[in-house]
Image 1 (cartoon, rainbow, N blue to C red):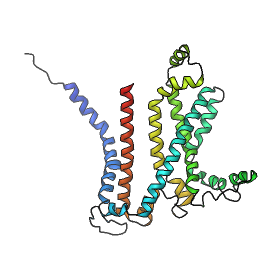
Image 2 (image 1 turned 90 degrees about the horizontal axis):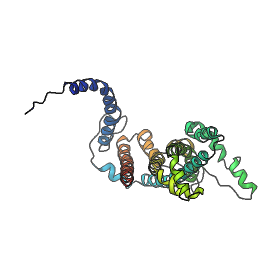
Image 3 (image 1 turned 135 degrees about the vertical axis):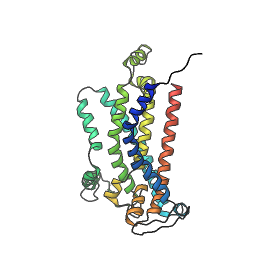
Image 4 (image 1 turned 180 degrees about the horizontal axis):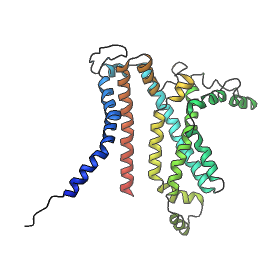
Length: 299
């Protein structure tokens, strides 16, 4: 019976690998795992900034959470905002990517132009959007007035403020989605289009339905998931332009967490909100992975 010799090479590689990965492990524990554990723990306490002591309250924060009108309103506003921004930005990003890919002239220029909203600071662009949406001197209402329509107070009325913020969100997200779809389009083998042409799919619609759309399946699932997560995480536009008003009509989940934790200093209550927010993100990621795995198996 042959004797098995110890693999000294594997042991040497392990001794070399641990010092290399140890800094990354320490950083993950310090900046991801430890804050996550702290947030979950604080969610079961009544901890407030400025107070030296706190007590364990169990699920009281979560009980209060789902009876809190402000939290329910912010959850609803976040859902409406996401339902508007995510699908429109995905479709718009796909349409722009298809147009750019089909037009070789000026391709680099249009890629850069549509990607500028992603690269620009939204806080710096807030002044521009405030001017565009201004009820009296803004060009949007001026244009509507030229055709006989009285423009609303976009950022100052409860029935339009969320839709105004959604327009800004679509403007910011479409360019990022365009870049992701362009990457997916360039990865499609050109031979498939030649084969589809031989099979009689000569129109642009047939080529899109038979080749482009099926091959963009994984990319589309990824873009949809990223778009939903980014929409759920909206904060800068609300903080900069509306402060959650008027009458909490534009208050979203992250802004409510910010208010509770850093304005009212109720860190324990804000931590419970954060746990709910993280749970929503985990569910979305789980759905994405399940759909991607199913797509791979079917492929």
